[in-house]
Length: 613
Ligand code: AGP
Image (cartoon, rainbow, N blue to C red; front, side):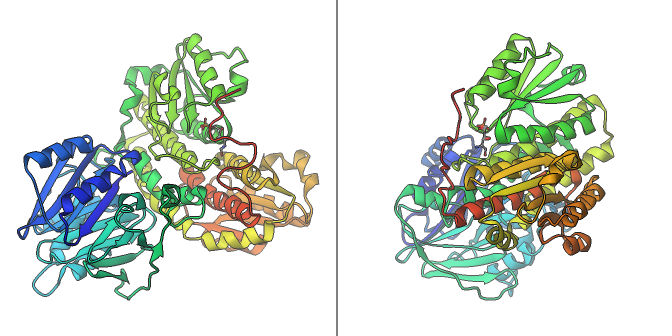
């Protein structure tokens, strides 16, 4: 989780930025840096590792000034190192930028800029932004216009803050998509900007939030917000509660809604540092997996509970399809007592957000005793499921507070996708073209999810229609069958409405008897290999008088003509479609529960981590 802090005012920016970054440390990072305008020049200090190293570096070579920006980084492109740490300066040394997100089209921009003579000093995608600004900056084009032109060139979802020694009286900030908030803090004769409110709350409680595709020009006197197209945009200054919990929720009523909207950033972060976009390869070093070991795997058993188990069901489809390894998915509370058939050629892969779920840990111990290689996909750093495994993949989503898991569901979907690509690469079951396409598809996911989140209005309309139903049926097939299970679980656990996820193909074997006007049917019908089957499923449900809510791709007139409601998602490569099809279902469960006035973040009878049997 990258963190951003900026300051402009009468005080020394350096300590304000450092302290602000410290308040964002819990989000995790692998390097840090800051840039301050000192005596008319941009001075940069960057260090790999923790903020303590950066602070020590600044003690050795102090930097002072009234305008500055700072950053803590999860490496996405380019390994964690000082040269890849933000901020990044261009060739003139007059412009500097910090950035959250992935520049999806950075390869072509880097080639274009290099051909124009730009010299790159890092392996990061971020650096293309500062070279683009320099391309447009000139006598008649000032920083704001140059930044606007640059930001219109980059694809993906971003939070960006930049400044220039040519115009030291301003900071420019921008938000594109949902890669992470950009919050502006209003002081007396001084202003702040950050990726998250805790970084600036000690200085001010008056804040405003940038919307997607908005830019802010921030001076000591205040902020002027405009769209990326240059139109002035109104904004509201909120006075936030001092209470840190409320601060952490930011602009959201519940943690769950915040975490749903955080998924662009959390997916960016779970991809962070694991994709070499140049070579088109996946790197999962914490798995400690050699080619020989990968080739010796005879079976993978995925074991988990609840939502994590649904992620495992998606993983089965991906790993079998790409790496051609047989995969079983076993509920942990069953696996642990089944005397399972595992041996030294079996990998048992546990998935757990908390890393402390009793049944999952017991399943891991059972696997260990039977000689299996133990992997885990875990969110909580340092948790047991991470420590006892032979190798692990960290979800890197940052803390998930809402009991109903959202970002810690989509992150393992992407982690399992990367694992499937890695295993296929090591076992030689996919060619380079397929592998590079898989990587290209992956880099689009954060902004595809951002597009889904922008459709929240459609979901609210359906939530109003469903808020008083007693039952709900979720149907899916193939890679999206587990999403039917997950959508139903989300609704059950926070709205207390009885809901059932079902393999769509099974309907004719009994459950179709359930369908009538009082049984809304939510059907997952993205353009994946099972689309035609789902289309006929919708027709069957409609012919029995059912109310159908379809999750379908943009422009699908057929389904829009059939279903009572359509929740649209952007076309997504089918192996990654569970990441987008689940978003409207997360939002639907949330809004129904909120309309029912329930305690969304702490539903009755539930705990965030079930550490007992
Ligand atoms: C998710 O919405 C539920 N709260 C629950 O099913 C959860 O996924 C399950 O308890 C597993 O938790 P874990 O991922 O921390 O192991």
